[in-house]
Image (tube, rainbow, N blue to C red; front, side):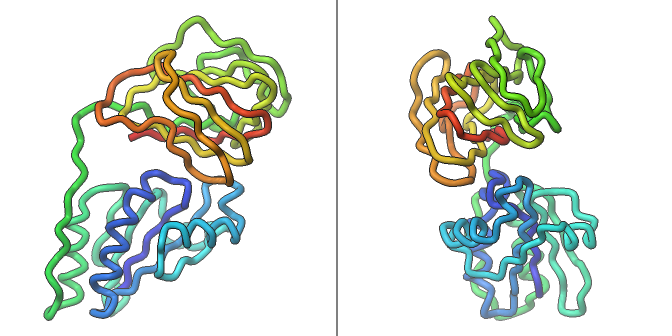
Length: 262
């Protein structure tokens, strides 16, 4: 029985599923379950094998990880999502699939049904709780997928000075200071700032390079994030979700790719 998991290491939705996958690997590997991770990169730095190896080790993943940099496996499965899981029986037939987060108990039940008898007890799965908050969508910072942008007109691939607007609509963001907006990322220049009117509990940002990001929420200092390496970083982590104004003050040379929320 094989469970295929399409993922990428800077995807917060993928990362939140990994504790469940690791639990299934530990619980059922000796009972006939083989888990294969298919790493399909969203950003250029995720195509670097050493980056994938380093982050796979940090995440404690012991099952095989296939690199799908050309999306050949992704395309063969007609997959469209991170994360996505496909469960295959002993005859090679796909018997179950699930896209995104959640339904961990249902996925484990499907695994157990295919494995058969003499199994350890099922994991005590706690499904994530959702409070009904309509959170801000994933927000990309490169010009190729720019959306919900409320600042001055972007000049692609040219470093220029941007002025922050007086106000933003819900889920809009804007650049301030000097930025170079490339296809999939924006590179901070002198006095680089970024504002976002978000609705969520948690805010994450994919960053690359080396430097710091000072995080302010509603004008008050939240934390300083030290960036060392190309990955997802936590900017805000709060138990109660609400609408807030986020401001980032970004070291020159850092590259910002995409916000995600929880």
